[in-house]
Amino acid sequence: MRTLALVVVRAIAGVLLVLPTAHAESVSLPYDMMIDLPEGWRVDGPEQGKVGTDGLLRVQLICDTEACEKTQETCTVLMRRKPIEGADDVAKVRALYDSPFQRYFRLRAVLRNTSLDAEILKPLELVRIGDRDWYRVETDARHNRKSGLFAETVVNGLYVGAICKSCETGMVRHQDGQRILTSLKLRALKAAGVH
Amino acid sequence: MGILPAVPRSSEAAPPEPFTIDATIALEDRIAAALFLYRDLFASARRRWLMVLAWIVIVLLLVIGFQAWGASGKDDLQAFAKRFFSDLTGIPGLPLPLILVPAAIYYFLQPVIVRRRLRLWYRDEKLDQPFIGQYRFEAGGLVSAAADHTSAIACRRLGGIEETAGHVFVQLKDIEDVIVLPKPQLSPDQVEKLKTWASFCHVDGLGSALPAPESEASGEPNLTIRFVPTETDRAATLTWQQERPGMRRRRWRGFATAFLVTAAIPPLVVIFAWLFDPQRVPFRYTWPLFAEMLVTDLWKWILGFWAIIGVIILLHPWMRRSHARQLSRQLHKRLRYYETEFRFYADHLDTIQDGLHNRFRWAAFDGFERKDDYFLLRQRLGEPLTVPMRALDGDRLAIFERLVEDRITAGGHKVGEMA
Image (cartoon, rainbow over all chains, first blue to last red; front, top):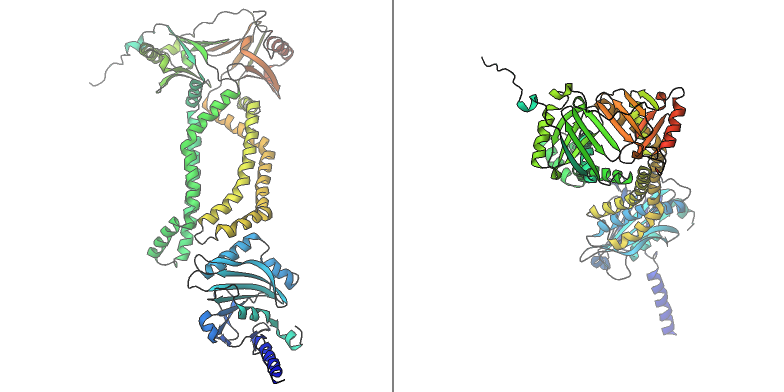
């Protein structure tokens, strides 16, 4: 009986450990959005972000855990104030890369952003992350450079992008980054308890 | 002192002895003659091209200059110069060689292209076969005879000779033609004789006062008409030439080529832009996107080009007419036009101007056409004779039509029966 109880306790503990929101901390982003940060992650700089020369608002996320010492993971959330034209968020995400020219320049940008001679690990495509569609592409950097997870979506008509960088080399990468993307929500919805 | 009496050279003073030259005039000689005859037009077309090119270069340099001025901070001349030259040799300067190199190639090849076009034109018009010309040089002028056509030209209608590496040209005054003699067929003695004759027999020479060589008398003509050729007449002939089967065929071949070339331009632009981009995405990721671009976008650009060509094709008849008008104006300015008399006989046709007497046996023609206000008598070995309707007043038209119908048939079978 003791052993059984121990197994159950361990199992529950295990479940709690792998649950992404177990130790998550919610962070408010500009434009009424919010994300949950996995354990060990924090906002580097102001939570309201900084506007770069390209007009995009950037919120830097960094990770201080032991695992991150090795992987050097970081994420940047990018947002644009100007709403995107279109019917609804789903249509707007799809419209981001309607044209092969747009897709070409996206690939060019992410490859440049990763490193010289970088490869495409996962092609640029629409994927479901959390409860929304994202245009995602993953790059694979050469020696000693960080590979990237690049994802973009539209929330309530506003463009939201994320760039996660990591030194990981296996097939499974950017797990924390994916969790952060999954957790992206509008604050109003969160308050109403809608997922 | 110092003033010498004007003693004419003996060769100019004494009428030269008549002599004859027989020459075989091949296609290349005719091309040389056309190049010589219209050398001013070809040269000005080439110069015009150079001017257009210069303007394009100036505009491109200005654009690059303005951009460099803006990028260099607008105050430092040295920074501007540095930026300007780095732009010039970099990507922003790329349009310059892209436009300049093909344009310069065209400029240098233009004489070859003109020569080739002339050759094709002579072939299309079946004027590419060699013929034997007989030229008699007399004190009073020159008589040229080839197949069924003889011309007697007085010295006052001659403009002296011009020698090139391969030919001797006898220039004609106010006649849109030139007599070409291939040099390899001339002996040095003949060339000397020609020079002596030419210094006597030209519009400003002593021979200009002499009567033209006599043509055989022909008796009473069946019909005589007179008219002064005008610029409009010249345009009518040009328009007719533009609609010749060979010209039409080449035109349509040109349009077909334009369709093919413009279909290749959009994909090539994309490929070149990709090739020249130092940050280009590797080929393995690019080619599926490129294939998609063909389907989603590039065909629209191609269709756009094709629409432009379609508009050009629609406007082309009008463009051709305006070109014919413009060219006829240019050609008309080069010559003074004399009143021309056409005398129709049973076995030949004489066309007579002051100091010029052409005789065509009917066999020289292989057909006639009526086009708007003109009749065109097609020659086997040359350009057509144009007869304007205005010269055929009263019952002349009926007589003329009966005559040419009777004398000229497509196959030429009737020709010469009554001669």
